[in-house]
Amino acid sequence: MKTLYLDCGMGAAGDMLTAALLELLPNKEDFLHELNRLGIPGVTVYSEASSKCGIQGTHITVKINGDEETADMHSHAHGHEHSHAHGHTHDHEHSHNHSHDHGHFHEHGKHSDDEEHTHHHSGMDEIEHIIENLPLSEKVKTDILAVYSLIAEAESHVHGVPVTQIHFHEVGTMDAVADITAVCMLMDRLSPEQVVVSPIHVGSGHVKCAHGILPVPAPATAYILQDVPIYGGGIKSELCTPTGAALLKHFATKFGDMPVMKTTAIGYGMGRKDFSAANCVRAFLGETQDADDMIVELFCNLDDMTAEAVAFAEEQLFAAGALEVYTVPAQMKKSRPGTLLSVMCHEKNKEQIIRLIFRHTTTIGVRENISRRHILSRSIETLATEYGNVRKKVSVGYGVTREKYEFEDLARIAREQNMSLAEVSERIAEQEK
Image (cartoon, rainbow, N blue to C red; front, side, top):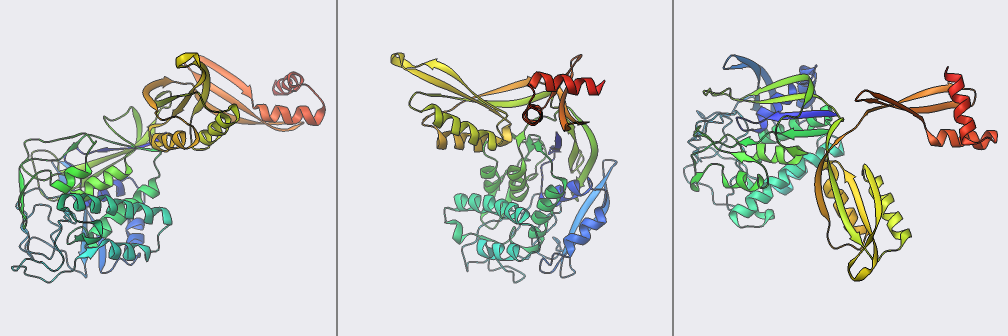
């Protein structure tokens, strides 16, 4: 299974994720050229080599109308050093050099009196308009807007206002649009079957902004990272930003330790400042073995459905990616005959499968078990026979090899040649010798 593992031991931000994923591509310059040709207003994205604790990686810089926004240009001393044209001061030291993605809410029209530069605050409608006009696939556009929706929902919750009143004076700027767009494009380009994210180091201490002194992780980040494994540490800085959190939350299929995998590429996305630990996000791309696979088993009891209705539900579950669906006769309470419905699926398909179980069955509850399965490695060979092509399933592992002709191919030949299935199988086996 093609797997992407993201090591967030120093947190995550949009530009760091962009740089780490960019390093996984064999043609980095081609991608940057494509990104810069999208026409994101005023934006040009550059990459440069960067070294942290002796490790070589990539650093991403975004320029707006030819200028890189820095802490020197604005009274914005946050250490993520993609500063923005507003007067909020974030005194944390950590620099990811990203579109400092707090997205702190300003009530419309209530800008700080000491702002040194005029700047534009974008709402979700404006963000959607920008994204919809970019020459991107619908899938990538959907991913970008989903990430912004996570941030907007977090800001809405933190500030107690509707999403429609949220304005992004940081995450809504064009450099942040570039970061989020770049990550979504890279994820589409890499197309991993699963994305595993490590527990996320969020930093510690406090961050100062126009609203006052806030704890780390910032409230919006903390809201986004609910149900995600996070931890603090000795670094008194904000290591994970709302944009980094939203990107990880959107794309992760699961959070946990690095799986056993054969890596084919490793990327290092660097921040700007130096710490005792390498200030980077690491991305590992490779293959994990299906032979040691974690699956979700979902169960429910049914006592008021016809066999035809259960069969229809099974069809829908298989179509949605279930690995196996089966039923077992069960004796329910008060000795009523019933059915135990069991569904196996991958973690990434769990939510959709649960929705379909509730939609297509009469159950009011679904149970869940996490299981580790050991399976043989499988492949399909196509044999050219006098009766046409016949597929053969080959399963290998644990010291055994099993082969089986595809039933549908055998059945087709049996009907056409007026033979039994056994006769067809014997004829094909003879031709293989």
